[in-house]
Image (tube, rainbow, N blue to C red; front, side, top):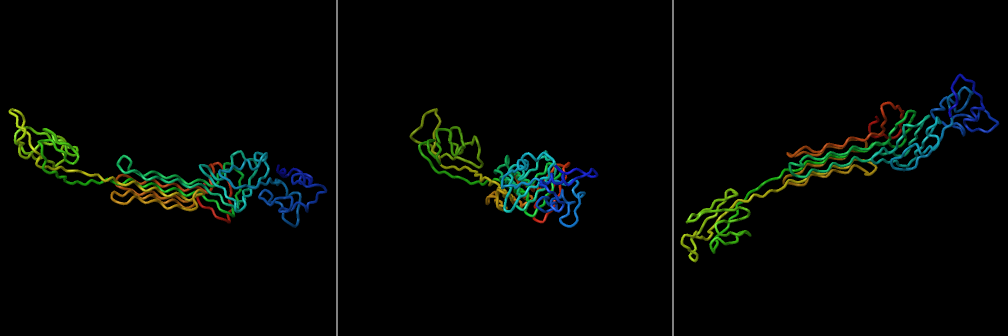
Length: 362
């Protein structure tokens, strides 16, 4: 544990015990950066050379060192077994080219039960996860708006005080995903279907439908009519304009006091065809460990009835873009940028950076 604070008397033997020096003990053995005293912030009062005094060692301490292996969703505490929760000074080294990644959690987390201090010396890469894509909407009013995209993941989560970050590598939040495009609008077109002369009274197949007796069914439309020599039947489920014309009476079926039967001379009906709108394009995935770069968004499907284009995925530590809109609804919202470093409001930490940090610290 760290050496006691001033003004309590301090002996060289206490310094030797803290820094594991065997006898005989000499002050010249305890320069900062030498074989016994680590060059860390806790020991900043100890000179690297020249005059050195017992009083330089108040509050200093021997650091516990740990090297961090590559991994996903790494927790710092298990890297310091038996010492994470005591007051020892701790140094965590992340060497190049080690990469720490996160999926549904921060790439590297410093838990809240830390005691003492922790110095994270990063020369590797700490990267949050990609923001998930927003899927494009189906066509049709019920599912018109595009779907929202996911936020990029956090690179480093600090849940305890006493943490110093010395970064010469890369710390990047994930990029937000691109929003999904809105569904496209359906379109309608109409055309007239004509049918010609029939025979054998009212029994005739026209376009796959049977015309029989005093009712005529053509493509889902039923015409019904009375007796006599009328030349047009009435439509019971109208497709306007639509019409069936009677031809001449048949001569082979004439019964007294019974309805006369007629050939079908001709007719027509109007048919409506619906072309569905296209689905919206899916958004692009944001930058993150699970995507080597920003993946381009997919576009809405081609006309007619274009779907909205998907939004682009965000670069490292930046938000994606929203999906394209159509008359059926708005495009899906963009995924937010992932933070490089996060912490609760009650936690303070310090950062010294000579490398690259992408994304907001918060």
